Image (cartoon, rainbow, N blue to C red; front, side):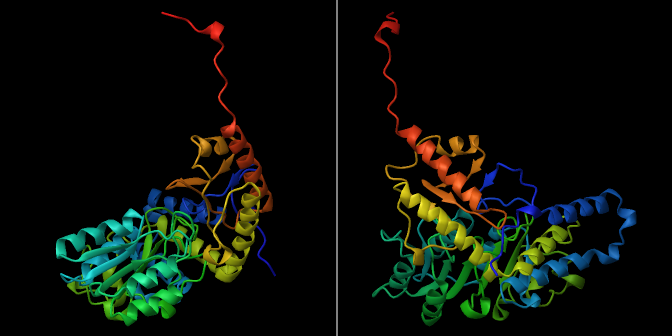
Length: 389
């Protein structure tokens, strides 16, 4: 049975078509309630036993692990994906003369630290150019196997490009990275909760994802998977949680952040993760594929090309409007309570389970109207109204 729209679980007014889940998801009512209950524990701390502070941390950790096919022992609680990337960068060698591989226009939280380390180490930052045909998988595989290239030390990749949803197929790429003897770091920000993510299949050294997008949780919280052979490194910071009694905590817990036991964020994260898991990633993926296919069909009818079906992620549709993004398009859509994003000049449309077919149709109608208005020639000035000075 196809997963129906879950709009009833969200506080989204009628008439709002919010198709911007890749930027910032609304909270389900249950997640908001968990956060509100957490606020009360800080408002009246005497009423909440401190002995249970660790319970939510472990519940959230376990829920995050289940969504990526990992053990809770292999998952750390961190503050952001950038913290996860920083931890990975601190613990992976990048020798002089080697190369670090990433794709063009990668998100700053991922690219900045690796580009800096490559420059400092005398390594090559090998940036794969955006392929004209949209086939990132082929382009990355060719870059890995390029004759005469420096030895590959680290590949920092994502399952899809954040700007337009173009697939970067780690099922095919990960084995090539491992065959080259390189470490694999994965930013799964735009994947976990909306498409299959399996650390047993990809075998990354590190993988990170936040909670505020596809797993319907709060801001400023993320999770870091560390492969068992990467669990003896140094954390970004040292605190009573990751160094209890002075020694390092076992497993990936050695990378846990300070002030980990947040009474507000952790219950929200656990509730959101468990809700997504209750639907099942496969069901969510199928539902979102239906919506983005509908959007793609409508976009093509408006004369806007889309990537081939096999190169599109199920949950993000990037629209490259011929002639470029008209100025004020995002604002014109928002004026009609239709929401999407401009990312690198691409109109990024990203429904989640709150969206329905009516939202898609409303988006397409609003887009058609906004594009028609943008194409109207500017009215010529009335010569009689021109004042000469």
